[in-house]
Length: 394
Image 1 (cartoon, one colour):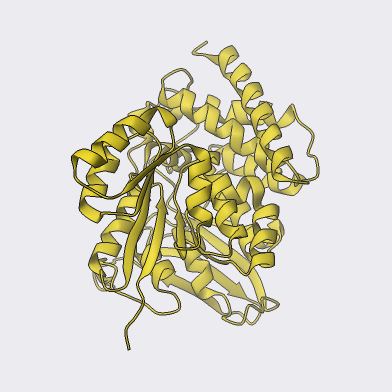
Image 2: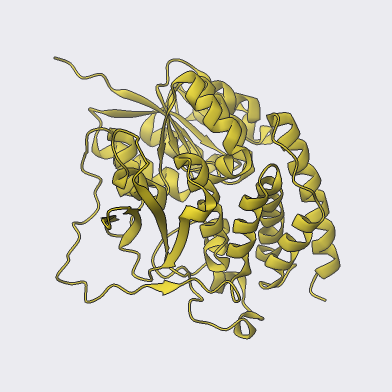
């Protein structure tokens, strides 16, 4: 009996998650096809991927890149259709001919297309954590109402997903334990971080990631966003989610049960494991990741996360407990602050200061719809930029 090939809409193809996804897809041409590829602004890189994978549609999010994409596809002799703009991303995410959407667009920009996929009842491989952080209530409601299967691609949430009961009954779950590598500055004092450069912050000891998420890992905001994400994905209260630093990044997360059992998912630090799990669930396929050599692992270490040195983690827990629109404000302020730091307009330690000041400037309002969230997101970005301007390398 012929096995149908899954047509994948890969949103965010030129990023680290996107490229890892294409590596897995290329290993299984009889199972998966990259039918849609998108990029934000990197036309040349998108064209190279189109030449290799020959998708039906290529989308450039920034409309200014459309002529170059259209002409480049024609020059390559490809039948791939060129599209552009945020609405095009939503259109392909909801299109019935693409059964699986991998949402890997970085930041809040990926939220509308992720929500479109959820409303269309797709198999949604979720690597865009901001969609859950900013609009978790709306996204999960859309998934429930439309029969959408959400498979988390973050290594931590993918690990938890694998360790939770298959029947969805979580009454016996005592805690979710999210592991964190600690980032490049684990063990440092707050004073020693005063002169950190973007290059130092982006040098992660275990994972190969984009610059924004690398900075989030260095501040532990990435783990804070994952706490909020876990709350929504698994319907678990903040008081049942803990973060533990595990510098080896071999145990990707754990689930603690009331009977004393603790289940953990282990593997080498390579995103292709989680991606392959999401693509193939409920089956499993070769991801290209090397087998874990337990004999070569001399030890597993665990430490408490130091929120006095890394206050972004505490700010994320605070935003989750405030609820409503507070996580939206947190995420917007973080994106503005990290961008300013990467452009050397803000000091590393001031990232948390901008986020805290922005959070304090807004009251948490109930989440009613996406338009309200987007308005709050925009207002928070404006306010955060004001704080950045005041702090610019004072």
